[in-house]
Length: 507
Image (cartoon, rainbow, N blue to C red; front, top):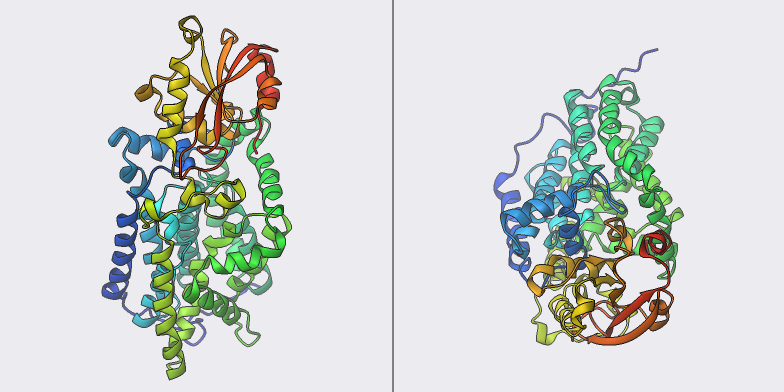
């Protein structure tokens, strides 16, 4: 028997027709969020991954070892429009983050939320120390999270309207997201599980959904071919991430960290929204969304994924929570909401990179720096380039003509590569992460400046090893721009063309 779903006002989850969009209130929230990001994006320096995106963008390809081609393409575009501009590089991240704030409010509107619900949903998103603050740098998770929010809105709107063009639009956004990272399939799997349990099962029978899936698969072919030709490094990177997460608590801290990333008011509405959707008496068209976070939590905890991997589903759950929270105008809720919002705003301001550099204390270990990686990963690049250039100039002229630089870390290699012309450096290589796939040092490079690592590491590659430089940026990341030795590595034990494949590492 054909399933018929009634989405008329008496059955729609949060009412129909839609209330007006709260342009003034949501616009004010979005503008304040944009202002906060614009004030902060010019602070300090490039984050290590941003330098990698620029370096990758100068080597445009259909695939990379650790990401899709979209971020390098964005970085290359901004690099061409405004070379070496920190602000220009980060503007796309600001724009898409602010757009996610507005779309979250639109999701609340789709659920029938009036002006207070829309503004609250936008404010909760904009006061998250992760959802908003990640927009102060160009990063894969910044783009990925926002695209999940857009897909969520399109799916929710389809449930209300049954316009199949929305499913095609969701497919196109998914296709774009697949060029960023490969997390969005988990969203669709979780969505399918929820729909199979609670409906609307009609969604799974829509030709538009499957045609859209075909588009996603077709546009992913070039990247998949690249991955297959290089041994699927992006899949192997998942094991590296899992091992890293295991060292910091992994599965035991995943859920608390995931909730904390939503902020104070955000985590409250997140949990309240999921609970609202899953209540036994709410057998309504949107209940399948309550299964979404459950499946994602199970998958990412089981695989030891990073806590922010599920952040893309926060927008839709926050929207549900905001609508339910504002429907009941109890004085107690108003009393709770105002101070929570105030504290959330304070938390976001504290999370933004606004401290004077003189007030930041240096750290001596990677474990300490790792707790604030987004901060310490922005310092020391000029010192690294200057120290490496000084070591290069000190080499005998006969060695300089054929020398290259090999950096222990892809961050180091990216920073040196981006500033190579300014500091007069030779070609830069690294066996680390995606940089290792950019090229192999020539066998004619009988002398190498090896940046970072230990003497034992370098001796495994060269017969003659000596320390010729040192980099110790005050606020640098230990082992990357602080406490770094530059080695002269001569007489390679094995030609680089033969050694390089075994040197590649993703950790």
